[in-house]
Image (cartoon, rainbow, N blue to C red; front, side, top):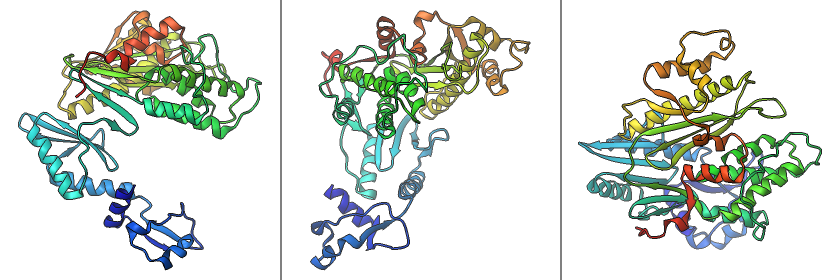
Length: 420
């Protein structure tokens, strides 16, 4: 904290001024005499002092470092503005930034060392060594894999919401239970409920196994009921029993983008809309997933699966752009697995007929993507449909099977490997 304050003072990030009377302020900053070298007279009036700075300081910082990277020969990704790539012959340096947190990797040790020394000179940044933590995520790098998790964050949630001693459950949701807006169970605190759901959504960064449960609970942010609150606590109880779970990515797998898409049928009891789910892997383990309520009411299972495939195609196109920036150009069509033959037939039929002419035109771009060789919609058995876990509550055995297919596992399964 003291180092951060010293750097803030050196860079002139903000200055202490008298508290304005006619303008709203975000918050009052207290003063550290030892670091800011203020006399006793200033400290006596510290109640009137506020820190005046830029309203968009992160944006200003991004503009500064973006300019510097451009001068150093980096190319900014057009698809992901926080991603920068620098090529030198066959070698590549990849940098990702989040405000003043920077992660970098590459294929050449000399390029890595040069970048590190440049950043130290220019911005007096500190090299923290091999990546172990980033934005609340833990990273375990071994001799043959990388494992990411949020164990510390998950533990803090249990403490925050008073569930340290709770009994764990084996699935996040009850397979036979559906949530509705007005279930008659009584109202609960919106603030507390939103805090739990928001925390769970952040946890989905490394826990795709709670993605559906978290997105489902997010539909009831306004006027949550006791039943919604109880379901949210059940998800935390599931987390209690899977604290050390995360995602493992192993070396030596084929660098090919592969996707799965699915949807439920029966939908929400409140408005009859269905849920789309998709997931993508690249090499080993999944790295992109979603569980989203569809914006329209579908009239058939084929239509709802067609819409789901269209949503997944949009994500596949973006991922292909990002991978190309990484130097991983996908020369072949991305296989997109769907377990509905009728939806596949609609996609591959260039003629619109009675059963499809009412579908919103924006979903039909999947036909163009198929014809251009961007994606290839192929059939997979329902039993092997990974995206099923993002569309509905599942029974224990089915849930556990799909969870393992996603690559979600415990740190205990990493035994035998040597941490770097």
